[in-house]
Image (tube, rainbow, N blue to C red; front, side):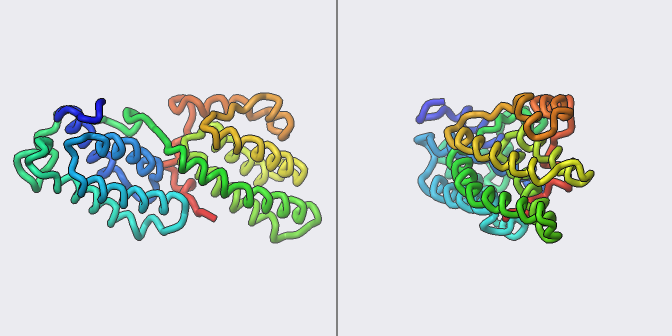
Length: 264
């Protein structure tokens, strides 16, 4: 779409935006992330008023703060939803992209709407990924400390390790790294079954420390068999590979209550 943006293109984007806003809930951070590229595309159109752009930019800041754990999502979600609906309905008739009735801004939009979230391309903001990677440096150092304390018999270390891994798993899911999220999920299971030692945790810390620079550059991180062997998880190779295909395995982090993220 060009910066000018035809009315039909803008209407299509607004339709997608409304669908996502209606889907938003406190257990569905991926939908919040998916709002970013749609809002950006709308705001690039010359026909969009500056008031709409300013309002949605503030809303994006609220969303980012919630995703990164700087605010409590449950408390700000109503404001985010209301702000987006207000922004959509505030488009003046002069833009030629609103419906006849202001109270129902989507009435004249194309009849077909995305039937599921999977039809909307996931485009995670690289700045968000980089902020996540920067924060992990300290968290991974803490993981190493807790692993060493656990190895010495400290009973308080293991709950902290599990808390961090649970948080990390959710963040990987939100940022659309299903293989890495599934890897952490398998590590959690191994810990629960007393099949993951402090030594393996230290190896996991080193592995993740090498992964973060790749994510920071916008690259993907492929989990190879040798990595799983190094982590003592070679038997989990098939589960990791299936994370690439959501139709073959259950990696729907958004709809699984156990994946509610408790950000550190």
